[in-house]
Length: 435
Image (cartoon, rainbow, N blue to C red; front, side, top):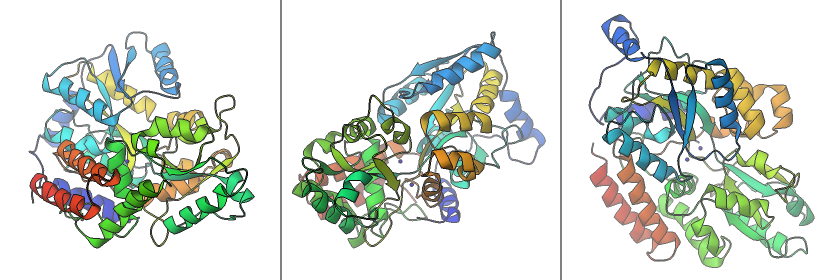
């Protein structure tokens, strides 16, 4: 949901959230009363729930089964929420607002931390118990709010350009495109070949949901623009932002993005790519293993991955991923803390990568020769994550992302001119993001 240096990501986080929400106590990293208070919150042992979006791999249940085998008195049970990130967030908020103990561990989009922590819906975690030093710095930054740890990274995520290498080879295109002009030129060549007949050019996540915020942010960043600057000030009403948004607007208009793609979330696009109907697909790493699964995919061994394109060179991914947090209203928090340590350990991350191709937070895994041999895209993915740009990190994130989705969807579908949509979005964001 994704090229700013690491320092830029961390500084942007600190500057933006400094103006958000109240201080709800916790581990100050220096011991004393605050540390004791935070650790004291992690009490109680017994059954827990693991609340997460739909697991398309089935591997998450295997990990829970492994935990349950060794913890007969502290069983974990998965509560599966809808595929849509927006619906997942809505159900988690409803649970928090009613102060229900039904949800124990929350598998959260990385951008929700500030909102949930500021509203006191999460239990802050003692840094002395959760060592995140081996994880990629941008992923750790997403798990913090006001320099306190409220979650632990479960998966990192960076956007990748999946492409049909066999079709590019047949059309004489020797390298993956680095710019949007090169993407469109490659499409034109492929569609003129017999192998490329009937194949659509490009798709991403363009339905009116969180994925659209991610995709729009990427094309804007890839054109030299931004949605918000490092201080959190909205900056969408600029020529650079318009140039980026117009990449999608024009591609829908001329058919290079097929009409049905404006209804695509991750899974719809994945199935379309795996059916052999799509040349280029902007997608997360999890697609790699599924697209190479014999019996269900028609593109096994026919595709490769590359960095996302930009206007004048490689683009910038939006920082995605998921963090695990403990609900402030949950019971058995000591068990929950141990479960989080178990499922985010390096051993578990390795197993998850091998089973699902999802991006691990642990930095060393990206340089492991055995893993790189099996997943050649890992160096590209690591660069994508380290250079990724975050979505606006604000307490009113739900309202912010809704505004982005509404205005840019109107532009992409031709309902509103792009300059008018961005001007309206600038006004809305200015009202929602207070200095």
